[in-house]
Image (cartoon, rainbow, N blue to C red; front, side, top):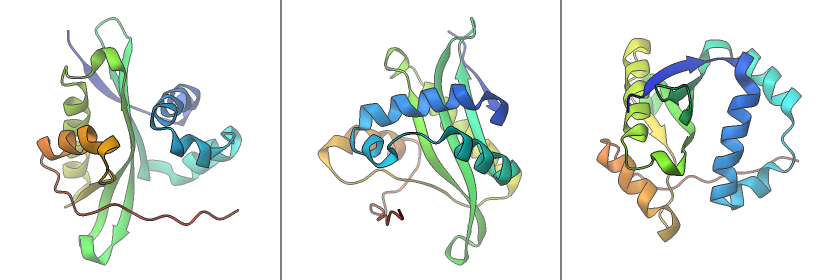
Length: 154
């Protein structure tokens, strides 16, 4: 099986929404935080973000989607300027352990190199539910630095 990674844009927002919702359903808690997906608001925010927001789609030879990753460019002094953040990544269960996730990470690393980023961040909290995810990212060269905190505005 050959997997091709392609960047997609806001014109395929509904497809990306479907896949991110799959991820959130599997995670459980995050879907509750989302509530109802405000498609119009997110689509406009995606347009406004322009090239800072990138979605990568992994497709099989026959065009079937095997996984996605959303990445955004951020900025911080501690990161020496611009850096990438993987916000969502989901590989469909039948494609797990078939290097689809690794191919998506490789594509994010290539994006980082093109953009001059010196760092890519991803969240994988320290809890038994996240062990497999954390081990995957560590196998891709990521170093665990601790979970993140959030504050939700109404």
